[in-house]
Length: 112
Length: 115
Image (cartoon, rainbow over all chains, first blue to last red; front, side, top):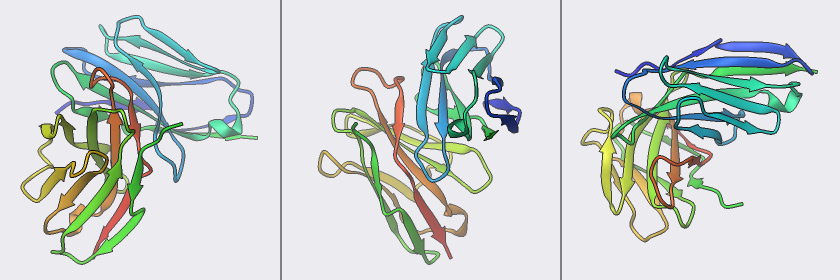
């Protein structure tokens, strides 16, 4: 059983604060790490797919880093806005398999 | 922007009944997936589908489940005889013009309630 853990489970930040969350995954036989943003009553929205150790990806105020050797990824949000409020999911794919294993998510609430 | 659509958005059924959940993936995608999320639990992989056949399935995807791409646009998940524990949100996703490991695009989900 693959274990993909995310922390914290939930987070409240003030508008304008920067924040980050962690996803940890098995470091052996790594293939890809996905980050999704999931707003209530909407589809999970793909943010990043990362495949290489040391990858850094950026989309506006959101960025992510990847360390496959130690099995973690960080998602950063700079200057949080109320519209960033959502659950952020990471998902791990092992080499040779199509199955994607999701973490439990970090629920972010940005307080205006 | 192209998107994955799913119907119905909600379905209520009696235990033992068959249900078919429908998905229309993004038109040029080649890889298709079903996931489910039981309330309060993680999103779980059910099955992936490529080139008109199942390419991988999880231990959840037993003989009660089947998938089909009947007409080149729809992708369906059938549950033959629903159980109470099948109540969940079911998500369809599609990906990949080239490789299955590319970004997966999710539909809005079908909430299934088995009574």
